[in-house]
Length: 411
Image (cartoon, rainbow, N blue to C red):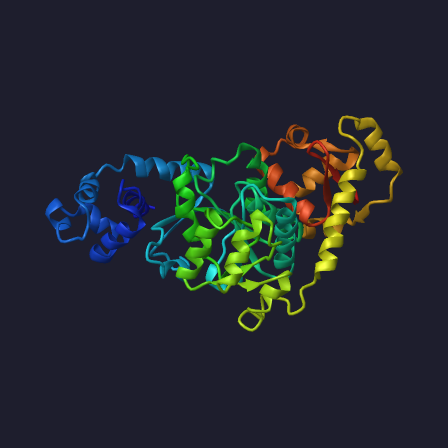
């Protein structure tokens, strides 16, 4: 842990940036040696005077605070020299010196990771295809990587979560600063089913300039990048440029020639991106490289994916309006019998938190806040467990962020 503070010190030098930090690391080998170096030892480095002055600031107060915040939030810190630091990122000209991670641990170099990006203000066409591609890629065994702020990134993540596949969201701020605020539940879902990754320490706001920096990490972690819908300028095209510079594969969804939001993807196809119409078009590129990860026949065809998404939408529309708790519970009791999980199988199928939530839901629908009160389990753990129960098909979410059990525990 003591060595981590020097990595954080180096990564947080104002004005140094990832490329400058790599220059320092190449010269001194370790951040600790760079920290204890004198001002005259920085002179041979090809840095600006302001960057050398930043290195002369030896205060570790900020680094110590960041370490404390990470411990409080349960974050993992990965540094450039760690054995499991992705080689895909190590090869970049400006790799992040430090990554902050929340959620599952992935060995990215062993994953068939596909980035899915698109416009922040998409059309219904873009939303439909981003969600479908996220669902099909995850169903086929790929690791879906995207943002989580808004727009098509969010749609792709939701599609992958519906498929039960792991997802990774690369952030432009601290993992404890959801942006926008209404995405906070999606942050929790991603952390439960996959991971949140960022080079920015806890408490960092999501600034516009951070997104351009973030994009190189998103594409760097992946084998290929899918652009769903975008204009010929902006963040998606910036990500596409990073992908090409990093020698990643580039895929794009075609759109109508007179559709402004498809101008960017059509342009990418014109310049060599592979035109794709379903997840299989992408997965087949990597079947031979990842035979243990990818299913040669993706379990969901475009038609099956469409039917699954339409069924989910239909279920939402058919659910009773929130607020009528008594009627809802009556309807639930009159509905089809729930699966009975034998006592001997419960511990194998569910965690202790999940079992506590299922027991609390046995009497009817509850909100997340009600479940926290009933079980006395911390809110973050309740949200994470609810996400995993939904993925397992044991719980469903109803309007008003209320949850209902689809299984019954044998007493």
